[in-house]
Image (cartoon, rainbow, N blue to C red; front, side):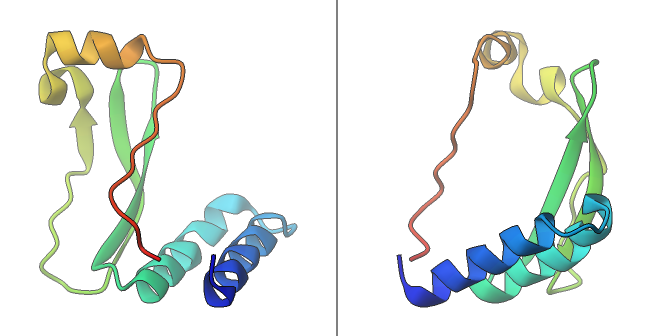
Length: 99
């Protein structure tokens, strides 16, 4: 891991460990993620017990990003894939090496 990446993650963790309410920190952290990794947008969804995800916070670098505010997982994934997803104890998604 490069020194710049290590410093970036240390700064994120320090923010999260501060006494500030974590929900107040999310917009700033999303902005930092976009700037550091050159992402066009970053977002956080919050789940509930009904398999619906609600957009909690987002940050756009460009105005043309359209992100759904509500995601219904069974509708998006289909019954079979949703059942498989719900049976997992953990989920790891690796989109690439940004390193």
